[in-house]
Image (cartoon, rainbow, N blue to C red):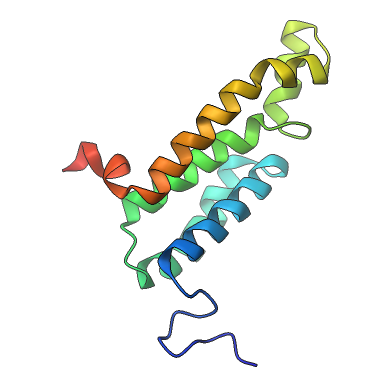
Length: 125
């Protein structure tokens, strides 16, 4: 079975499913990989997919940066947590509990940036 669908957009049926898959992928990678490497390597590779679905490049970039920021602070392997543990002298789980409300709020912002493009494009209009 081919990964290309009838409309030529590959295995994604809609723009929303493509954006969700990219969010999940960026989120998972940002927890274990350096943010600059993600943006430099994956950004140019995946922007063509986003363009096929009509996603503005600025919107796509804002989505990547927001995902990477969340992934760096997500327990248990986000490396910003280890910097915070060293500076604050606290353990992983107390720090993770302390930042949980902030992670949830950042996920809300990510959903707004991803699914309401005018939020990401507000400053350039």
